[in-house]
Image 1 (cartoon, one colour):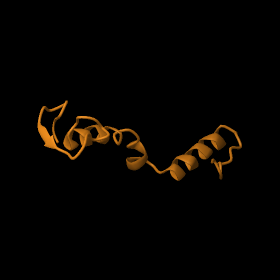
Image 2: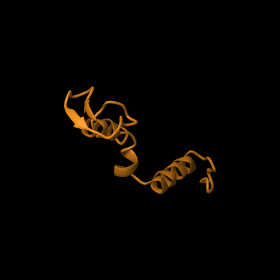
Image 3: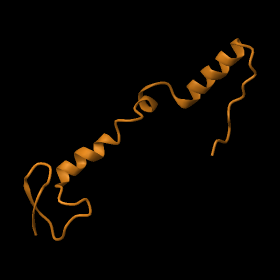
Length: 73
């Protein structure tokens, strides 16, 4: 089956209509990558444990007895 992409207008061949619709794989991958742009702070900034220690230390400075959460699920 010869299908024309809705995004880039290129033709691609598939045995049947893909679940994503008439979108070629390269255009589909571009939209999937958008999902990974959010949350980059968690991979490039301080770790969760470091942020937790800082929050507890900041609370102690202000006289608050904060305890880290051990099971948050």
